[in-house]
Amino acid sequence: MGSNPRRFDSVRLSLHLDTRTEVYDAEFVKGAEFLRKARRVARSKNLIYRWVPSHGKGSHGTLYVGVDGITIVQNLKREIPAGTLRAMIEQFELEAKDFGLR
Figure 1 (cartoon, one colour):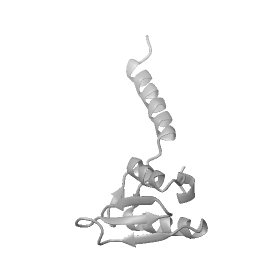
Figure 2 (cartoon, helix red, strand yellow; figure 1 turned 180 degrees about the horizontal axis):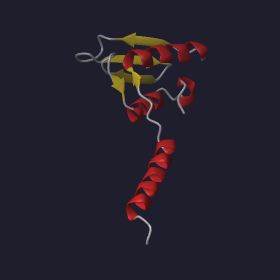
Figure 3 (tube, one colour; figure 1 turned 45 degrees about the vertical axis):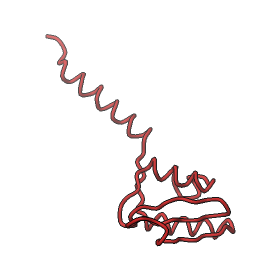
Figure 4 (cartoon, one colour; figure 1 turned 180 degrees about the vertical axis):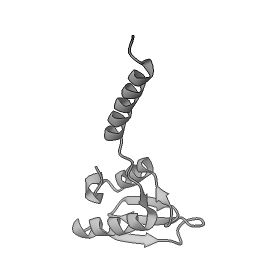
């Protein structure tokens, strides 16, 4: 009697999923939480912090950190996807670890 091919596929699939999960760690942060973290980082690095909700359309607003750092923050109640979050942090010329991210 031979081995069960389904068992082999399920083991291979679980190994693939485990590896993928370790490599990619989705870090979602809500807009309001991002503002709090940005304020904390700006204070710790002695940077200018200014949130202007009127400089945006609808639920969007503009966040200024430092001299040249500008980003648009979407709805404060919605989660910001990981890629968007990292791009926003890069616009401030800061690092993700400053915000408690990997």
